[in-house]
Every structure is written in structure tokens, then in C-alpha cells.
Image (cartoon, rainbow, N blue to C red; front, side, top):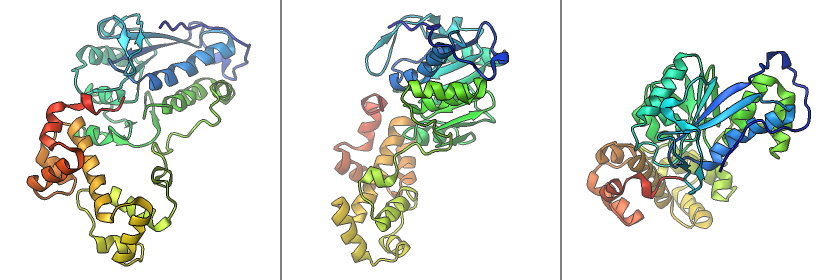
Length: 342
């Protein structure tokens, strides 16, 4: 797969044309092995279409990998690159494209390239789990950032001093990060809007059949109503409380009182709409959070247990085994490769 900039298309008048230089903005996409193809393509296509819209290279982009050879995405597609991370330089923007098992490599060469370009004034960004690389390189200190919701607990546990949120994307001065997936398109469209005005950004969005450029503060995950496939307000309220009270689980009476129901009424509500008791649903939420922490962090298993509301290692291990068919220790030995999101 070869991607080339400079594809021409219909003429377009850019409101900020006086700010456009003849050489365009140089953008380096740093591809980490098993990067997310959807996040990468969502980030690079708006730039290509912006070039096409105006008939010139507003953005000149190139792709780079650790060894300068083809880089394989998480879906198995190989992408040709221009060279190695250590040779990447003279960019106005660098974008780290992360994906599966981002925690495993040390990313030393990539960290050096990012720090070098940052010192020269380049804007530094990331899509999907690429935020993890920026955090490890010390390039997010003092900046707001975001990451895919599934990777948020792991990143926060390792970098609790950083301002990491759950927004769709964040653009904070010369740092920009996004949750991944199609959120990369919204982030890039916002950057195009900032650089060249809303008219061009809207035209690119139309070319993408992207009906609305989402705001940075919009939520990443589907609304709880959509995720569960139910609309009962009291049930949704209780599940929401469960998802935000993991380390210190609420009791059945507390949950029932929060929505002015008896515990028996709450039990019937869960059985009717979700097919399980409130206690079993709550336990599943806590165990799924535990699995995420085990796969994405080096937290001791006992700490994971406490983080998810279990007061003893034996109780945690048994509940985990019953739910997932293997104990937490086996999950940790397997590592993130078997379960990480692609």
C-alpha cells in the first residue's frame, strides 16, 4: 500500500489563503507495529482531501516505522514507509499511530524522534493508543490529553499526574490526541478548520460523508441506553451508579434507594430487562474492569482486586475464574496480545 500526497481536485478558495505557504505543512505519521488502521486512515484521509479540495499540497505527509521496513497494521495490512523513526525530522507535525499491545515495546527510537522534533517546535499528536507513547516520552506534561476509553484505566494508573480525560479528542496548544477510530477524523477536521477555516473543513467532511464534525468534549462511548438496549430510566440510573462505583461497591439497598425502589422491585427490573440479578450484573462490570487492568497495566493482582472492590485475593480469583474460565494469574501470563483491542 503506497499513499501519496498532492492529489489534485476541484479548485477551492481558502479563507486563510495568506497563511498557506508554498511548501505546505509537513506531517510525519509514526506507525507503531500493529497500529489501528481505522484510526490511521481517519487521520490521513482528511489531509489528502484538503489537498484535493484546493488543488495544492496544504499538507505533505509521509509514513515512518521503527526499522524503515513495511509496517503491519492490526488487521494484517502492510503499509510501505519512507524510513526509520531515527531518520524522521523536519516536520511541522508528528502523529503517533498506536494500536494493539502499545505497552510492550520500549519505543526508545520513537521517543527520541518525537522529543527531537518537539524541541524544534513541531506539534506532536497521537491517535488511538499513541497517547501512551507520548505520555511515556514525557511529552504530555502540562497538557490535556485523551485516549481510547478501553485504555484509559491503564494509562491513568501509570501516569496519574497527567491530565488524561475521556473526551473524543483534545487539542491543547501544540499537542493533539484522540480516542482513535473515527474520532481521528473529527480531530483532523478541527485542525483543518483551525489552519484554513470552516469552509474547507466542511467541504472535506462532506467528501468523507461525515455529516457533522463532532466537538472535542463529546463522549467516546455509546450512550448507556444504546449499549444495554433498554430505555428504563431507573435501570439506567442504577447501572450508571454501578459503573462509577467499582472500588467501593454500593449495596443492594443503596442502589434501590437511589431510584426509590425496593430491593425486590430492583431485582425484578434487572431480571426483566437484562436477564440477571443486580448483583450478578454489578459483579460482571467489576470483573471486566479488572480484566482491562490486568491486560494493560503492571499493577499487582492484589491491587487490581482492591481497585475493583474485592477485599481478598481468594474471592477475586474465584470470581474471575467463574466468569472468564481462568484465574487472574493465568490472564497476566498470557499478556495483552490475546485480548487487546485491534
